[in-house]
Amino acid sequence: MLTINNVLMPNGTRQTITRKYNKEMTLDGSDLLALPGLIDPHVHFRVPGMEDKEDWQHASKAALRGGYTMVFDMPNTKPATTTKERLQNKIERINQQLAEVDLPLRYQLFFGADKNQFHEIAKVKDEIVGIKVFMGASTGDLLMDDESSLHAIYALAKAYNLVIALHAEDELIIRENASKYANETDFKYHSIIRAPQAATKAVDLVIQLSELYGVTSYILHVSTFGELNLVREAKLRGVPVYVETCPHYLFLDDSMYPELNGRGKMNPPLRSLADQEVLWQALTDGTIDTIGSDHAPHKLDEKEQPLCKCPSGVPGIETTLPLLISAWQADKISLLRIVELLHANPKKIFNLPENDDLVLVDIVNTQVLRDEQMATKCKWTPFVGRELTGFPRYVYINQRLIDCRSL
Ligand code: DOR
Ligand code: ZN
Image (cartoon, rainbow, N blue to C red; front, side):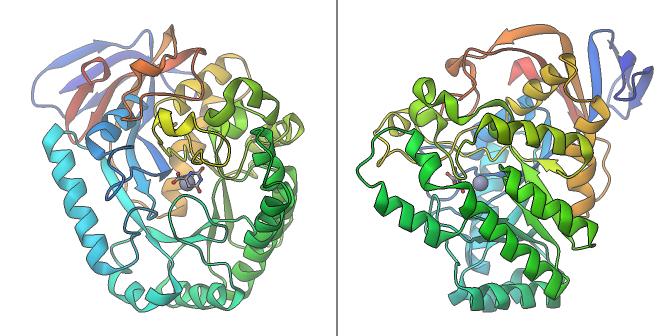
């Protein structure tokens, strides 16, 4: 039996908690906070095809060090996960990579929507956590921006009772702006090209489709005031839409491009401080349901290229919890809300089974984030230099106790 004494619970009480274990072990929980195993509904662990950026040997360590015991991986790999055969190949590779490091990370996979491969969905419907639709192009070649294909995928999701996760940015608006600003080199133009209107226009369409088909939409990485207004109103009408935001929209903004350059380039892009304030309000009032890290590693030398060549995406799975725990210590968010966002809501939306995973978080010691200290294969973080508290000390999963300092 594993016993943790006097540990802080999210409701503010101190308790003794126990777990099944292969020997008698007692931990002093005085400096620790106990959380359920965190769920990251949005990661890009890059297998297959982009293992130079990330692989599951590194990403599993990064996930566990970040307090996550379950991740949902995205299909924009090489090749994209759009057929049963590719899905099975991906599962085999992931299992092989996890076995190599002997780490017990739980995972689920999104299946990529590709209008030429719709017939594959029937074959995989019981093996996937949902369908991912890119309404705007991003890393990889997945794109489905025509309305008739969007109607077709919603009809399929209805028939098979699947959730649709959406990258909701309007491709046409982005393309028009991209040609208008094609000669600009300042990274701030990334936010101007992928304008807030591109996101609101796409979210508006998602809400219409969800309502029409009665299909659950999970809107990924919401970042603007306008999207939240649309979603708030849709939720009031009972439309089945859920909303994710990401740590970079909560802790970085578009005034930071001069220091961040390519480290601040992701899709959707960084937004204004005014948008960020509204995101924090929406976190508290329940409009936002989850926080996904959108862990999207690219190599630092790729990110140091000029705007037109720099790929979009930032790593985040090992810094999300410390950022939020530090925000709790600054009275910006409650622990109960953190548990809803990082555990209870993703579990509910995606109908996951119970487990007894546990994360024991050090809430006393602080650390300054350094690129070299990151477990992700890409070895950098857009939050470099921040002094944070709230790094996990132990993770309990599958009757194993993992000391995060050993990872
Ligand atoms: O910034 C992003 N990076 N946004 C995406 O939609 C994809 C992701 C990636 O895979 O690199
Ligand atoms: Zn993503």
